[in-house]
Image (cartoon, rainbow, N blue to C red; front, side, top):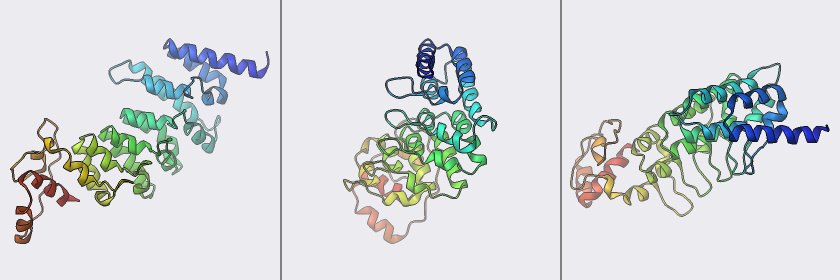
Length: 277
């Protein structure tokens, strides 16, 4: 059988095993077929096996699938199989919308998978290369974690990126100019928004291509705030059960009081919010 035919057969076998969720069979093919299998895009949407497994994973599902994902990523870590740069290249493979495996893991919010994907690159000081990869909407894995309100994954990716001495502001915007702060507020992930402001306060002043700032977005969500209440603690602004990290209120001057009193009562919370920017 010619090499091309063998590759087609291998891809079809992998696809069939994935569709039947025969993960041990997938793992066996993965182990014995080498780089050809790892790089193979086996769906019409351009997914590799690793893309498929991460997409299929659910925290409430089988722990065995998580172990299979880790096992497949571990293959890339073996120095006698892949050189560092080659392993990085495999982990950067994109599907037809430009997502890498790390994009999927960040969107899922699974810090354990994110950690495993980045572990070898971290040792080389190159984890930032995976974290700054953009899909075709110009979204990075960090952006997607914030967009979905995945706090733990967001904090992990941001910490890793900063440790490698890179400016995270560059990876916090998508193609229309929205920042992670725009996105968190649009999704009403207010705890995430406060975390972003705490870590990257300069994002409070960014506007998208339509000139929309985070304050504009916040102003469209009056249902999220207590009307006619003068807030002493940020967590009081949330109507619902979301728990927001307490933040100390800055001292207010007499001049601030006068300015604040000129605002309608239901805008006070917006003023209070941006005192932390």
